[in-house]
Length: 521
Image (tube, rainbow, N blue to C red; front, side, top):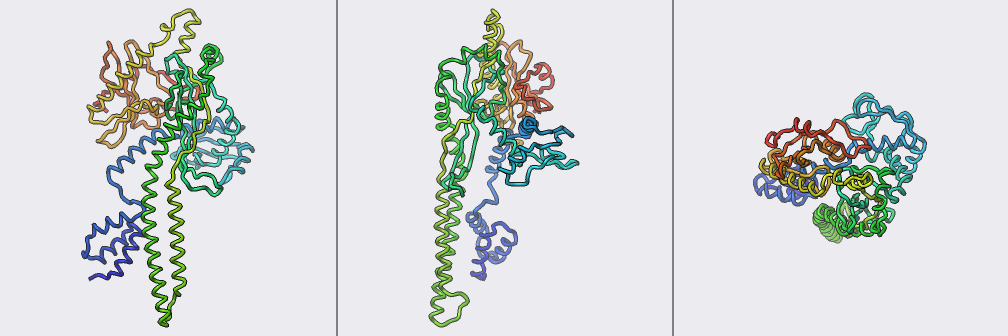
């Protein structure tokens, strides 16, 4: 027969230290078949504040979410492009060395001073023998400093750039979309949105638990829509000549209305609520489990010290000598009760999750290339249709191409999902159950006579980020019918396009020469 007191102590230790093998071994040795060991494991799992194991379905769900986030995250390409240009504009001297590595020979005083004002880590140096933006480039000789979000050098540069140019974001800009053959302008707003809980910070400000940058577009009719995660990457600044060409459109009444209010209203109803729901779905179950276990453990400790205080009081009345007096035990129980109350109040504040009002950080008017072509055609005395592809015909061909690729993926046993409306650098996220991974598919429908394919900067960068999972699907539309898709696997370029290139045209025949059928992928 096993010792009940020893088992009680082991159970308490197991709950504290979870899955440590030596604790489990001693626990099972103590019970020695007297109780159901699986029942004990289930009990420990329920009482643990964190789960050491997860169901296979949950693991798969998390893996898919991570793959999707990896394709959309702020990549080293973006950080490098921004930092090099911004650092030079602030007077810094930086030179390329080995592939993906740079040498900084001079860090301006303004950057070092800004770091003294806002920095919390190691100070910014006057020069760096090597820096890099990818972890894989760090340990080459000489060892490089890894510049990433949070590094004091990058944070100081961002702080100065925002201070100098933040007003330009509010002032707005006129941009051109090279891939849009439509005829109507649109306005895009950059909105910053935060989610908070009920806990105040040490300075008394709201405790932010999640932040997002989101884009909202508004058309001439006042209709607002989600503009995707980074629509600006596919746009370029309009030239003075192009602005003059569409000046009549830029002075239309709808652009003079208070579009910011419409953008904030849309973000509050649509974007902010989805953000709050996402945060609540993740945090509320965690808070509920912590509350349950904290309450159970502290109440157990309170009851123990209450009983201990009563025992010590009786021992003292009986004249027995005790190591601990009953007042200290009672005080310990009161302290634990006070701690439980404070902890429950704090958890209740953590449960109170709410959205802060979205804030407009910037805006732009987007001119479609189709409008520029039409205006240029009129200025030259020609018909617009001679210079631009029919947008409606293009839309129909794209829909047919999407349908053909979705059918091809389903025939392969995959689970495709149309994400084109999210504008994330690909049109279809297709789950392959055999490999357990996603395939990111960009679809291009080409009508009879087309000899080029245009890809945006964002699409090319996404292919560079995920070359093993990225597919360019080309669907030729002949006599109104979609042919079998052809798949081009891997990166679409060997380097990131410069900021001057928002879209690049590829030769259709050369792409088809390196393509394969869906069955061969």
